[in-house]
Image 1 (cartoon, one colour):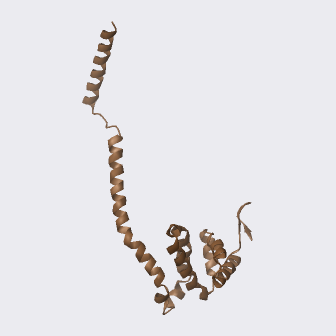
Image 2: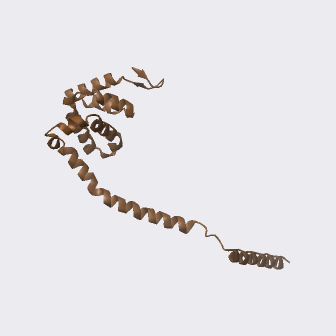
Image 3: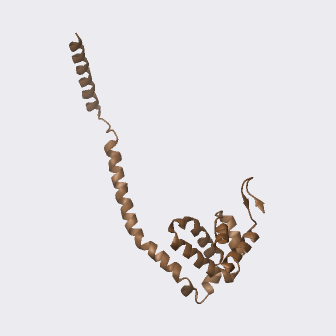
Length: 166
């Protein structure tokens, strides 16, 4: 095992790959979660490069199920999916029935993309509102004439204060 720091120990890529194969074969969700916990790109890349070809599609489908169940894990799990597609692209491109096997991930991506334009519009509107709010609360710089008038007003009010105090 490779020590990253005194408190964290990262298994060697061979060990992680073996754990991943074991988790997929036995459908051991706890073990799979333990493996997917690692997010360092180098660790993910080395682990997936040791993954047997027979486990590629099952891993893609398992990660897809996890994304469907909990979309908030997208950032964490897409690290694995992206690297899986990069590492095993030649197999995926040469497999004749891969499009059929990957239908669940296509559907997941399509479902996410349906909401994207709406979210972009909403973000634009929110940005405009926030900018208006900032503009309303920020002091407007005074021109030279306005500054002179303001100073004269202050001088007059000071004189008025002096007269009233007498």
